[in-house]
Image (cartoon, rainbow, N blue to C red):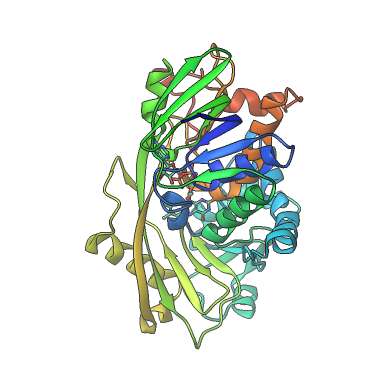
Length: 376
Ligand SMILES: Cc1cc2nc3c(=O)[nH]c(=O)nc-3n(C[C@H](O)[C@H](O)[C@H](O)COP(=O)(O)OP(=O)(O)OC[C@H]3O[C@@H](n4cnc5c(N)ncnc54)[C@H](O)[C@@H]3O)c2cc1C
């Protein structure tokens, strides 16, 4: 049988792999995605879908411009994907209320409050906006631009968009080995072998095998997050309630997504009783009446974390045509558009913001002993 050839093969069909395929195929680059399971079925489908360009960051320097760009791409993507593929990514506006319970917490949010789109709301103003928020608060930081999408729908939008652009997606096709051959790569999978001029590894937390085979000493660590959803048919919530990385996100249907635990180096993909109990307690402290709502679903996913909590996005320092885009930790949904565009631009040898190239380069090394490198 003849081996199928592509200009670019993306390994991994989560939101990052599909966003890359979407932007490459839009440039008429013959692209394939090889996904071991089902498109979006791993960490992507576990996400809450917040586009937390402000709620997730404490510093607003080099990487902030990347996440902010990515965030604002969703506005046009939402229209494009609906028009061209009929997929509604359920972009929901309303913003995030970062609840503040003490002066100390308020001080920690001073940097974000300096941004023009961010505003301090007194306790009274918070209740006017969301009357079911906790009575214990001092006030809240309102991040009006931090909207959210339904992650699997966004991933499906990129997938269908890529298909429409001519890309091919192979599900249930696990890549076993990528071998340099001629000017490109032979890709051995559990089904067929393929050949591609360029290969992009986007396997989330499962990228470690490819890092080590490419001679890169990186180990992404899973940070397990457990979530649950409840049915909310009587207490309308228009804004996401957020506090110290816990949240209640109102989806377009009458569900609230509540998350999430952070269990470092836990590879188990199933939710635990203790984990769900922990997030239910936290959710009650943000919105006490949530305890009267009907539970709907429990789940868990593995966030891929690098040593400095930044993703690796770039070309291998020695092997031309081999790229990585993995390690997006808590913000892979947010960063998917910018990641897809950055890989596209690198592969097409267009200019890319130098701060981003440096922040995400593959040969950066851990400097734990000097206390450097860690973002937050
Ligand atoms: C509870 C929770 C809440 C979150 N909330 C948010 C949020 O609100 N906002 C946000 O921006 N982010 C959020 N995230 C983070 C976000 O989900 C991730 O950063 C993002 O999904 C990573 O996408 P990915 O494509 O890199 O990984 P994945 O979605 O895991 O995709 C990787 C794919 O690679 C495939 N694969 C692995 N090995 C192979 C192989 N050898 N061959 C072929 N395919 C392979 C896997 O099957 C998988 O489908 C959350 C995560 C969790 C767990």
